[in-house]
Image 1: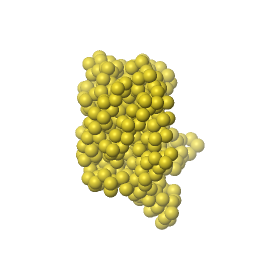
Image 2: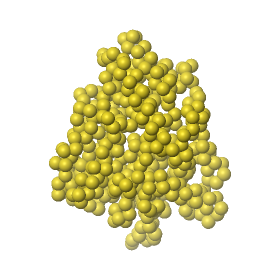
Image 3: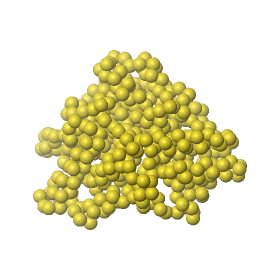
Image 4: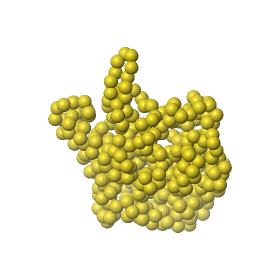
Length: 404
């Protein structure tokens, strides 16, 4: 892995100032910053070969189409999918989950069937299933969590039944940082003949993801969480499911033949890619995955483990600071509150110091309800952050406390 100064030099935004202070960016759980390589790659699409993919016979279309499909292959390799056509490009993790909720629901769900999610889920892995359950008269079941923010596995096993048709759980909590034992969840579900969707939006950037080793049936993530552009995401699905499920949307490129009497659908993966996809962002995502691979995913995971340990130790020294989610297995995210100080007030003051953190419910209201709070302050770190920045955060929090 490159040294930290060289890594930070790859991200131009980290050089900017906010309110006259050096930017300290601890909002990586919301979106990560982009290396210059990704910025250059997207710019090159628009300046050198911008053209609609798959439809043209001219040179620019050929170049764009090839770059787009090369990006699909990079995703396949990155998550170790078995087949390139098992990789579907979408607008993001949210778009991917909605696609499965609709298509899987239309094909397999009947009244009285049950879907299992967990208390840790982001709204994007709750609301689409609620909508599906309402549409299909199905039932949503929720795995509870303990005081450390961990799934209670025995309660999950109790929820599995002959009525269970799908389990959809996060790989890592965006609100607490808890890493979920998804391999055990998948194994138990498969023993009951139940497929599993994993929301990898908060895990894909923190370590090695191997969908075949996990044996998940679906896996979703967003490009902008892993140093790529916004507006692009991935739905991985095992071929047997994608072949059997109806498409989520209709339009150009997802069809084989169209008449007013009947439409036949294109082969995978195009069957699920209606219209003009955000191909510049897909190409940029491919470059982002190249960048992460070049740094070394195991090295990234180790660097972020060190940062998390340092941050927990530093923040634990502050009187009146309570950390929520103290699982022994976490991504580099800390969620906390300051006694007697509202999270929005603390976040606003830290912002004036140039420190970007996230406040609120983090689109995970059920997690907040579980702990009887209305939100937290969240510092989400990644490999380009430093111990010095964590010290600045600690000093900033201490200043906030003194002010109140």
